Amino acid sequence: MGIHGVIEFSNRMLIYLLCAAVGWLIITTSLQRQRRRELVRLAWAQFGLVVAEAVLGGLSVLTKLNPFMVAAHFLLAMVFIVVTIRTWERAREGDAEPRPLVPGAIRSLGYALTGVTATLMVVGTAVTGTGPHSGDTGVAARMPFDWDRVAQLHADLVFLVCGLTVALLFVLKAVGGPRAAFRRTVELAVLLVLQAVVGYWQYFTGLPAWLVGIHVTGACLVWIATLRIPFALRERTRAAGSEPVSARPLAGTAQSR
Image (cartoon, rainbow, N blue to C red; front, side, top):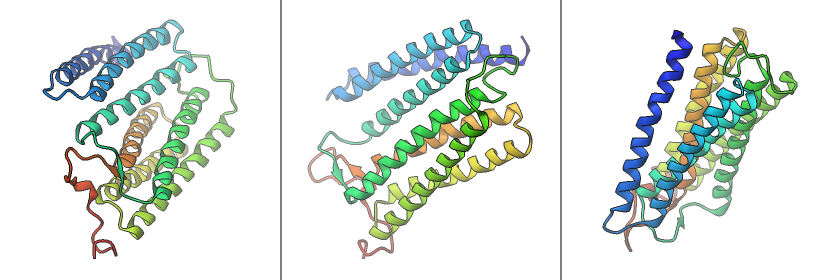
């Protein structure tokens, strides 16, 4: 089949494993002794997104990997990640009303970081769709954008995301924020540094196709790390009086003393 055929066939086979995992999630959330409706809804939402992804994947093939279809396919996968991360986090906490662990301004900073990262992902698809690699180097159709300007906008958003991440690290340390939130922000910072290394590597080596794949993988990891931060800025207890680990302040801060 060639390397492209192997990749395509492997992708389709993995869909069956994904469907099995989602099906297992639907069954287990539905049969819980204390059924949690949100988890059931999230499980079915994952099923709907898998079906939608299959449809978009078929349309991408039928349109000969039109870059807009490829971008939509990728962005829908990012929505799927949003739902799976929320499912994971909500399954580990209770259903009490959320209790903030940091001041409102810091929570707003976390939400701003998530929003800018989401914008970065969208612009990133435009960079790929306008550049020489949009899923197949033999496809003539490209997005009708100026590649230099789109790439510059993408770089500007990267710097903004990095700035917000550093700012969040400083304020969490200053106010003695939750350990989990600080740790997750550090994880995001490390991933951003690695992404920057890959990005500059692409720039200085003429954008080889295999590096684009690594960059896309890194983008998914950055998105996951970003989504996990807001959940660590508040808590939802399982029962009255319980206190999750995420509520513990950072060591050495005024709050911990």
